[in-house]
Image (cartoon, rainbow, N blue to C red; front, top):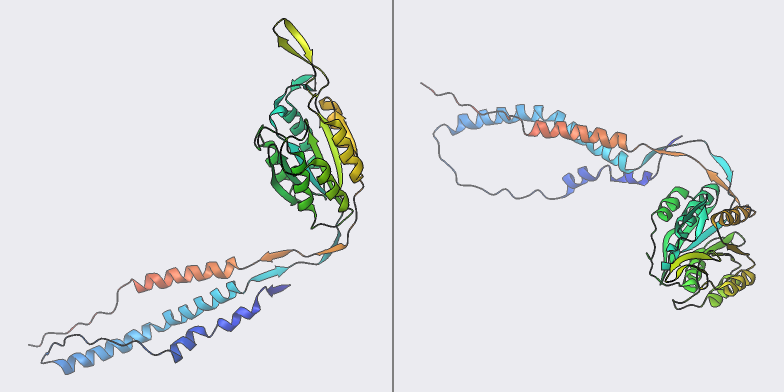
Length: 338
């Protein structure tokens, strides 16, 4: 069906005529006159030339009127509406909170038999997880010394993937503000329906920065019925070179497991521990099994804007009119009497 988005714009159609009709004409300044003996003959020739010029200007005037009409039509927003269809909107509103602190560069996780940094493994597994969440709104928060919203909740999964793939270590600072990250995620989820909101928090350390404590932020999430799924990432042991040869260390000694467990318990979520890439993959697969929540059906109707057609035609006609104006004007010629 053809329609206009803003049909009331057509009230502007008579605007040029109203301006011409009711606004006073500008004053014409008189220049110095030159007395010539054949003024009467010159006046007659000038009058004849003006009449011919007015006849020739009829089509430019009509062209200007047509251009104005086309501009009004384009401004009114012509569009073609397709057939209406009902779509059931399902899914969850998931906010990913990813730790980018300095320790995420530790190469203690194995993925496909190779050691990789924690952040590289997270990207390799979280991006396919995002791709699978068709019908969900996904948002991305990164945190280090501070927490930042990188991508608001959106159905555009490709944008979230590209943003996460471009993140680097210590982008948000070298420390870990878990509480601020949860608080920011809760704030961004408040405007969305209850019972369909969840936060997936991934970190490899303990809260050592920010203004909000993790448990206080978790209580805010619990009050708003927002589940938090916590993932503690990092290997239990790692071989590093030492003064007296290779030695075993625990690269995850800063990981605050108790706090992560309490956060998940307080909000009705779950706590997971990933010591390698395969375990992290399994965790994301479990989270992917979250039951989607059905919402009200949404009426969808495709809309195809048509304003470029009248606008383009008005542009072409304006170019023709402009060429006409810069062309030759009738010349006034006076024959010399003998």
